[in-house]
Every structure is written in structure tokens, then in C-alpha cells.
Length: 333
Image (cartoon, rainbow, N blue to C red; front, side, top):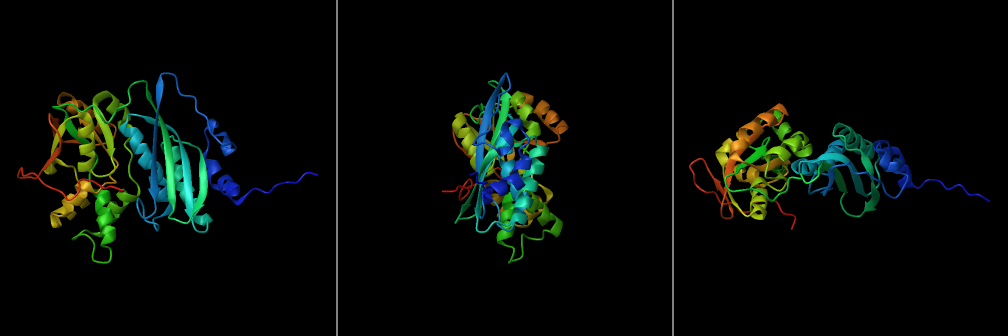
């Protein structure tokens, strides 16, 4: 006697919301316990994984589509900083409480749109439930020409400290969220505050910089835990010191206005994290060419200081005075 087994609730969830995202042939339509990839000839694989947890990396009431986008994009940011191009991702998600299918639909829609936009198809993963907060882990897989991955170590004395985009928007958005009941940040208007929140919820991985970093940068990483702290990590592993000037740090108009109205916000902008911009070491003689190429790729880059012999990171204000911070970066522990 044959007994037909009905799909489990988990199988139905995967079939409805995540199977449509698994377009790579190696994903096997999510019908197996694993996926497969054939590394392109002449390339190395680059692997990275980041967790995003409700109440830590996003707010539980954030739009689900932005949560899906951010979960993928923070990993694509890591790949970009290594000079790698994405080829696929694995998703592990642990739901809290009862499953809201409307929420899952919007989450998978946001994630799926970015999987297409960044040519990073879903390859597989896992779904579970937890008594704790909603937790999402994505492992992104990229490719880079053999031996060309841009490492965190490699900055040399005389190299310039270079960042992409603008710094501090996401950290100021978090501060804004904390103050939502007490009047916000200074005199920022609604469009300005909306722009800060957008930058927090949907970071922009600088994937177009990947090939340029391979050509121009001696070292690179993305800024996820705060500019000052991450610069210290890069300098320390490279065996050099670094000095940056706050007047040169690129700020968006909302961040500039917030800091102009409340100077203590500068520390939050420089140490708060969630920028997901590229931080790199570029020889001074090659910076102009790098900046021109980056501009053509649609990403502004700015030299904010330089590396030298020694150790440690010095942050100088507009008068040349060295600043001291309570903590240089965000830390989970």
C-alpha cells in the first residue's frame, strides 16, 4: 500500500517563497540537501558570511523587503571590498513566533529583486524557528581572478587612506531612531531624516569598485563597525599607522547638517558603523587615476589621510588637534 506524504509546512514555505529565487542550475531547484558550483577556470572563490539579527542589525518593524535586501547587501559589500564579483548565496533564516506569510512574501520579494540586480542567485539554505529574535544569515560566494583577492593586510607607508561614498549616515539614523520620542537630530527636515534611514535600511554595496580595487588598492575592507575602528583593524594587520582628517571625511548633506548643529554627533558618525562603504589603501601616485575610474563607475571616492610607519590611528579635527573617542567602533561583545 502506497501512502502519499503531504509536504511539511517548511517544505511549503520553501516551495512558495524561496524556490523562485533559486535560478542557478547548481541550486537544483532547492530539491537537494546541497548545491554545487563549478569554479570558473582561472578564478578563486571568495566566501563571506554575515548574520543580521532583529534588534541588532535592523529594527523588527522595518519593512520586510528592506530586511531581505540588507541581509544580502552586507555580504555583497564584503565581496566587493575583496575585489570579488558575486556568483551565489546561501540563506539561513530563523523565524520568531508564528509565520506571517505576508511578511515572508515581502522579505523574499526584496531579497529576490536584489539577487537579480546583483547577479547573485540563491543556491540553498535552511529555515527554522527560534524562541529568540528573527535571525538571518547569508553566505555569499564570489569569484576573483586567481591570486588577485584584495586583502585587509597590505597597506604601505605613504599610501592614502581612501573611502567610498559618504560616512556616518547609518549611525546617525540609529541615533535618530533612539531619539524619535525626544525630537530627532537638531533641525533636520523630514526628507533628510528619511535619507538617513534609507541608508541604514538599504546599504549600497560598492560592487562596481571590485575590479578597480584589484587594480589600484594595496589593501581594502568594508566599513561595517565604524570608520575609525575598521581603519585601526586594517592598519594593525598591515603593520602601519594611519592618520585621517575629519574635515576630509565625506558626509552627506543630512549628516553634515546634523553634525553642524550638534558637534557631538561627529563621534557617532565616525565610530558608529553600518556604512558598508569601501575603505582602502591606494598609492598616492595612483589615486587620481583611481578616483577618475571610480567616478566613471558611479562611485565617488575620497582621500581622507595617509598611512605611515608605526602603529595606531590618529584622527585630527579641523584645527589639527587629535581627537579621542570613548570607543573606536561598534562591538557585539
